[in-house]
Amino acid sequence: MLAKTPPMGFNTWNTFGSAINEQLIHESADAMVDTGLAAAGYQYLVIDDCWSEYLRDPQTHRLVAKKEKFPNGMKAVADYVHSKGLKFGMYSCDGVRTCADYPGSFDHEFLDAKTFAEWGVDFLKYDNCYRPATSDQRNLYARMGMALRASGREILFSACNWGQEGPWDWMRSVGAHMYRSTGDIFDNPESYRNIARSQIPHLGASAPGCFNDIDMLTVGMYGKGNVGTQGCNDADYRSQFSLWCLYSAPLMLGCDVRNMTPFIHGLVTNRELIAFNQDPEARPPIFLDGQGDESRTITCMKFLADGDYAIGLFNITENDREIHMLFTDLGLPFDSGYGLQLTDVFTGEDAGFYREYFRTKVAAHDCAVFRAKLSRG
Ligand code: GLA
Image 1 (cartoon, rainbow, N blue to C red):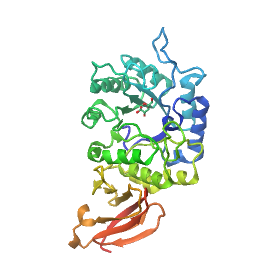
Image 2: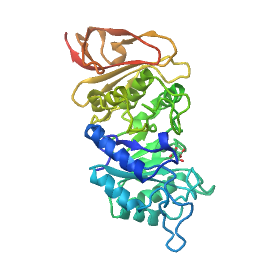
Image 3: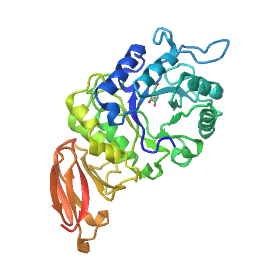
Image 4: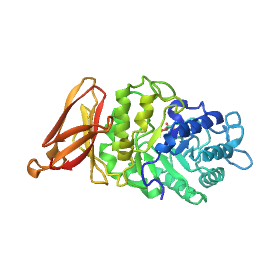
C-alpha cells in the first residue's frame, strides 16, 4: 500500500520554479542523503512544472524532457535518484497545458502514465490548469488514476486540484494518495496561517492511503526563490512545520535542501514532530479554536497510536500572548483524577504535570508543542 503515512520529500517548485536542470536534481539528491534528510524519512525527490519541451514529440506524441535542462533524458535522472536510495517524482496536468504552459496530459493520460513508468517514476503530481470547460474534474483525475494503475509500475498519485469541487468527497475514490486541498502557498506568515485555518473542517477526510495535502513547505526559504514573497522568521517556520505535522499533511520540503541552516535542518528532522506526522493512525486533531478569520490562536490535540497525545498551541498574531487550554475541552473532566505530563518537543525537556488546564506564554508567530501523557500525577 502506498501512502500508509503522509509522503515526505522535496519538490523543486517553491524555490526553483522553472530554473531546474539535471545538475540541480543530482545536487539535491546528494544533499538529501548527505545531510540525513533521507534517513529522517524524506524519500521522494519531485521535479515540478517546466521540465519538458514546449511540444510533444510529433511522431510518438510522447512528452519529451527539455534538452537544455535534461540533456541525458529523464530515465537517466531517475536512475541517478534511485542510485541514492531515493524515489523519483514528476509532474503533469489534467488539462491541455500545464500551469506554466507546457504540454498537459489531457487525452494522453494512458500514454503519459506509460512513459512515466518507463522512465522509472515513482510519484506523479497532477495539476489542474487548462482544463476543457466541458470536462469534469472527478473524471479527469479518475482517468489518470486508472492510467497509473495500468502503467505497470507502482506510482504514487499526488493530485493537485486546489480544493475545487470538494475533493474531500471524491479524491479517495479516484485513486489519489494525496490531494492538494488549498491554493498555492507563498512564503509569508499570512499564507501558511490561512491555509492552516482553512483546513480545519476538512481533516476528517485525510487518512492512510489518501492524505489532504496543504502544499509544499516554505520552511527555510527566508523569502528567496519562486514563491519567496516577504519570507518568514524562524518562529513562523517552527509553527508551520509543527502545524503540518499535527495535521498529518505530506511533508514536501520546498527550500533549497543544499543550503539549510542548522536551525532549519534541526526543525525538519525533529524526531518527535516527524513521529506526530507519521503516526500510523493519522487521526485529525481536536481543535479548540482557529477556524474563524478573527482567530488569534490555533490550539489542538491529536490522539496518537501509542496512547500519548500531541498538543500544539499556536500564536498567529503579531503580539506575544498567553495561551491556555482547558482539559475538559479535550475530553478530560476536572474530576477524572487525571492530568497531563508534558514534554517539550523542541527541547526534549520535561515541561511539568498539569491538572485541569495548561497555560503558557507564546511569542508572536511562535508555538508551543508537547508530547502529553495521561497520568494521575
Ligand atoms: C500550480 C500548483 C503549484 C505548482 C505550479 C506549477 O500553481 O498548484 O504547486 O505546481 O502550478 O506551475
